[in-house]
Image 1 (cartoon, rainbow, N blue to C red):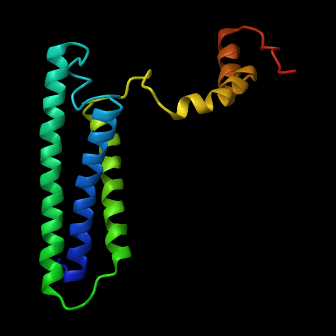
Image 2: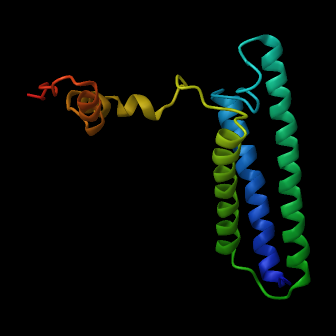
Length: 164
């Protein structure tokens, strides 16, 4: 299958976005928030040696993803210079966002679930969790479908704890 210049430009933008999503993930979640590191499920970052190994892996991964970003930029640059037609900026930005989303999908499925390279600890300082605390507290007062099934399976009588 032969791609024309416009398709190669979009492909290059998507590749750039994939690398950009990865570098943004490492910068925000690995370095700033420190929720997890690249190898944190396999190398314990709670020791100094483990933290150093995890930070080294984060750095090598960041450099590799900067290389992916450069490759995407090169594809876009080369194909923009080969064509006389203009490329709408919204398509380039859209392809970049699709590439970043593809990285997040890849990271979530492959890195977190299939390879189990790193996992966000349940006690991670998530800024969304405190804001949802009142909703969770209100929901705990009501019996859920899951809790009713658990009670029925255990033989206990159904809970009569109803919110007032």
